[in-house]
Image (cartoon, rainbow, N blue to C red; front, side, top):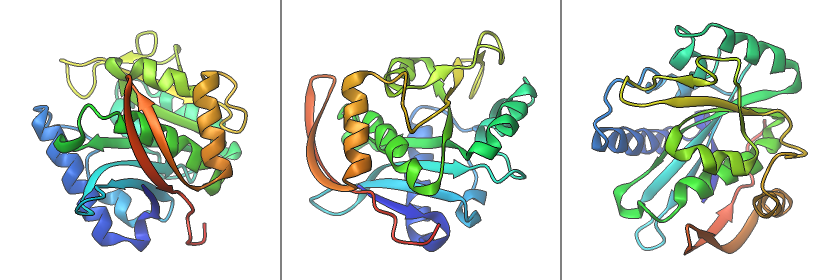
Length: 227
């Protein structure tokens, strides 16, 4: 797993997009409003990608999109028409340094291996490198327990007790945030320990256990470009 700045790695950005679009198609989702290429040109976007150790092909990814005070992250485009108060949530957190973790995908060859969980945790650990304090996400209900273990909590004042019909009427998604990723106050203690370890040691090899399955990850989360 490696960390990149989007504007410095256009080829990898394209590979990321291809993987993300394909997994959406596999689930029959073709109308995601935030699925576009604008992020590739944004100097405030970073992404993590996992590569297969056998053929070096990308198999999963996730993005961190910082809010610069003008260009709102994808969560606002996703649900802003349903509840404009989401913009206010971002505005209130702007001075702290805020971002959204988004665009999570894992290819068919690694489905069921827990990479979605592992990437999301790594993204939260990585975000402190780019001066993020408050982190938002939007997630389907089947991932709620996973993001809550990391420390995200639903913003119950948005939508219908935090719920939105997104990406379409067949699904329910929640908007959540971690107010302080430095303290990770609400994270599960075991998960928090892993996040702090990744933050302290950006490069490490570790055998993660997710859903009682083990997978060994070689992490290199040190961002080498200036932020």
